[in-house]
Length: 107
Image (cartoon, rainbow, N blue to C red; front, top):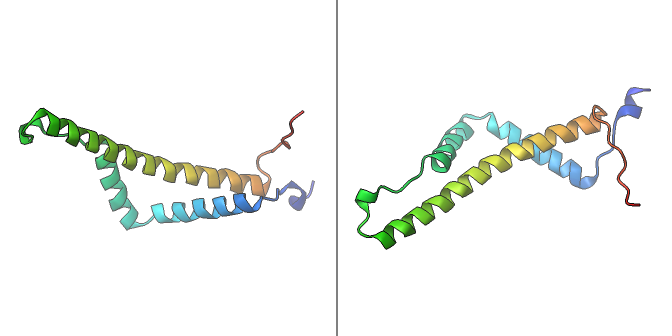
């Protein structure tokens, strides 16, 4: 089988998805992203409310809830970036014919 026969044609959506993932990967190799990643990880995994600084239970719960949502958003953003990069890697392998893809059909 020739090199061209092994390659797979990506759909337009897959091409966009692959390009976006590659752009995100390039972004992760910058100094600025490393600063941002550290901050997002700090928000995602080291956020809590100091009860000594809160005047009452309602305020504590309000701050804790907001902290949870902020942490969750930071975690989801980090996961989305990694997922997009992984998907781009898969699509590149698919494009090069390194993974076999069976046609999808519903019987």
